[in-house]
Image (cartoon, rainbow over all chains, first blue to last red; front, top):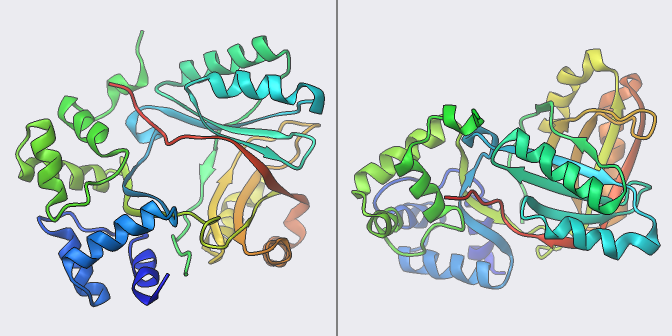
Length: 147
Length: 166
């Protein structure tokens, strides 16, 4: 990454404009030109330095339900349960973590009812309880990774 | 059945805009015009609706999501804290303001297995760096924190974006 890439990663973390030529507007902020900005964003995405670029939608505000859930899975059964959890289309992310609760996944459903159904299905098929931890409050954070 | 989305302020056109943009914004000089053309709605209307969704919080923000891992932040710690309920909102707001915290939530405890109710995601280049940052969180929480842990992800088992259906 050169200075322009870094300036773009920092500048693009919020407030991308909604107007006819938004990349041109960003270009003036970082001292570049429209075509270069577009090519650089494409390059950052292709190299995996940005995981996405565009509007971030708020699932709950769209009427959906988002939750974080955890399970404690014995190592010998981990692959089988991973397959069950990952097979659910409602599971967006799933991580192994170094804790007694060793499987952590994000559930994104259109409705809270669908979230309960998915959890019940995972518990039934896996034979292990799911600890559901939907957020009670979200505290404001600035987006501020500086590179 | 009354699904919650029946009450949401989104109409069919909004949903088409969401579907056309949730994977990303087109990388062309006039991206909103490209979306408009794709779904057959005037560009002014696409921009007006997206501004409204931004104002109402349906769109959190428009921009880039940095890949922390690829950018060298290899140690991503989910720090979890058992914070006195009566102080959690005040302290959660303060933890969210720390520049190295990227997500901060209050979540339910599951006693006795899971005593933690405050989650703060911390990204660092090394685990030492994450631990130093967790120590700063501990300092802010002071006596209100009765215990904490740091969970590192050891493996990504699945990673797809969030998607809504038709």
